[in-house]
Image (cartoon, rainbow, N blue to C red; front, side):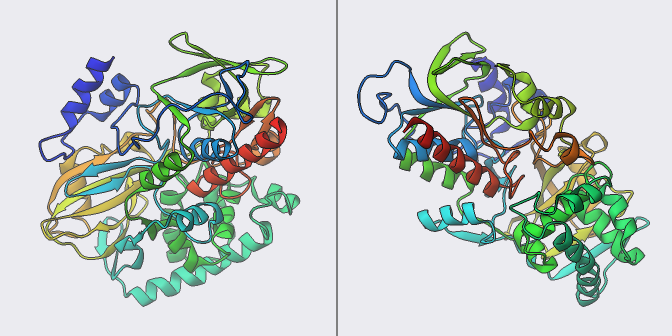
Length: 489
């Protein structure tokens, strides 16, 4: 397996540490989604398993954390700082989970979760705690907007587009306030939530008094940021608007503007350096069995680990692949088997020379919903695009990507393309978690973080507030650590 991994990782790195053309589907399958080791802290070393009081313990650890994304790393750091012995078992050979900061061209890109904001309390507290630097994505404050209509490009005045967006967005944010006046308490107005979650995003837009132009923009905008307008509950779009302060202007800042200068891995490394939990990479948990006073974990390779408690941060779509004894909440298992519909994809186009700071909106015939400027350099620049149905688009096909972008910018020259297929990654099986129509009524009771016996579920997929965001993962991991500290005493 290591020889296969080296073969495939070697195939994607050239002498300048750039990403070359690669059949990424073969790579992900062959390497078990191990991907690149990016910035793992050298201080992620073995620590004592003696526990809070220092005496020798009956079990290997006080807590074992399954998964090394933000939820898992947060929980491990907090537990270690509280004096409890902890190890992280991560299936990939890197930390970060569904965040992935990787080199590309003369810069680096975020292949997974990216943007943060001060309206997201948990992640912003960490940024302040560690003094991390923030940069802005150019396209979030665009200077040009180019749209497609029936496959033809036109460039309206920005003021006209913003006027349309804000007028239409006000209807959405007003509805969001009605359904989610307190977005970190999703069932505060449960009747309103259940009434609207029966519909999908497309149906919601049809119900609102929007112009054709507004409906078209929001159909593409929400399909790009919420994966697919026809498979996602209308309540999910409103939840996201509520989390942005019930404000359409803040919506763009929260979702596309601010990111960590040194990447998401910089925050992961700070947390690891701080708590110094033990980290074991390439360990796939197969079975989790609860006993009266401890939990036994078995891996795919046959290793056995024991701990007084477990934090499980496996994404919702992955839970079905782990055997739990006793079984987990039936709602979690049923939803995992059905699968949440977060299937969006992100593709980076490397283009020659400097490019305009632009926002590009497609129409209903385009596989990519929108593009915007990600990085501007003198020799090469980057544009990032978002779509949903990857089966109709090959993100590694530079010619196809160039043909798409030339519909908006006829002279653009694409020199490379890069993306990551989170659907094929066996340890994610999708992107950020979004609920299908009717899921709150059908599964809502079980799709929550917190304890089930001695197993504590913590993930951005289960948190009450910023579900689907880095912020939600951190908040959920911190909550699990607190609950375990109270249990273990």
